Length: 136
Image (tube, rainbow, N blue to C red; front, side, top):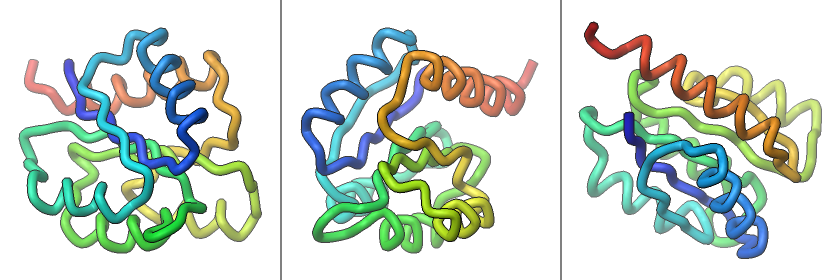
C-alpha cells in the first residue's frame, strides 16, 4: 500500500536524515517536505481526500506555524481512518506527551533523533492500521 508521507520539520538536516530513514525502511509512498505547518496545512486543506492515506511526521517547535497550531487545524477535517500523525520533538515534556495522548490523530510521540529501530516500529504501526482497514 502507498501513502503520502508528509514531513513537517524546520531542520533541513533532520528532514534529509528522516527521508533517508524512511526509504531505508521501505515505507512506500510519496514524500513531501514542508518547513513549517502553514504550507502543509494549506496543501492538506486543498487536496485532502478520504481515499488517500496520510502519514504525517510533525515537529512541534517550528517558526510561522508550529505543530500545535497545525494539529488544531488538521483536526477540523482529517479522519483517523486515513491519517496518522507521528509527533517529532527534541523535548519530551510530560505536559506535551499528556496533551498529545488525547489527540485521536496522533499515533505516537517520538523523541529525536529517530533510529532505524524506531522507524521500523512506525512502519509496523502504519501497516497494522491501514492493512486492517482494507477490504479482504
